[in-house]
Length: 188
Image 1 (spheres, rainbow, N blue to C red):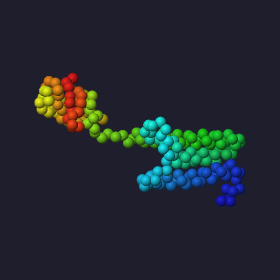
Image 2: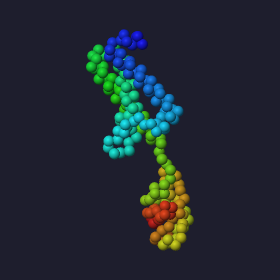
Image 3: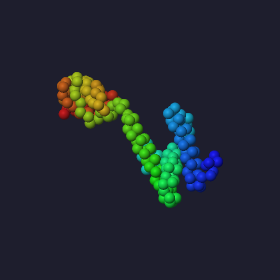
Image 4: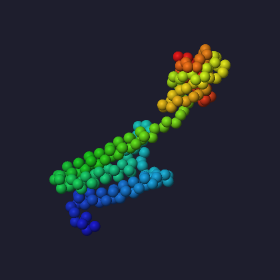
């Protein structure tokens, strides 16, 4: 501790910020990997959603503050002897801190791409083309079956038509859904 107190004032500030931010970062990382981060109802993030969109990234959050302080302080310590002008050193440290936040944003956005929701919803079949599997009787006089692809997965669903009979092997288009389970199709 005495070594820190004997440093030049700016370098001492960088070290104090680096130590505190690093300790908080380590705790955040441990909590993240153990699944304990923000699952207890305590949310330390400020909702920075200014444009009304459902963005997964919040600019003003405690985690981003720690990321900024890590980049700011450790770059200040690393470049302290290399950059003579203290104002330039602070400016470079701020830029590197902002770069840390931006890199964190890029990593999170790439990770969120891995969490795609591929659960089936019948509403996703509207305007899709389908293969008739079992003949669909004319004028809603009975049900047939169609094979329709949604998100690369083939689904066999009941179908009816308002038009003429559609034979097996024909192509049709889904135009509506009835009772959340029955497709209304028309011949292509």
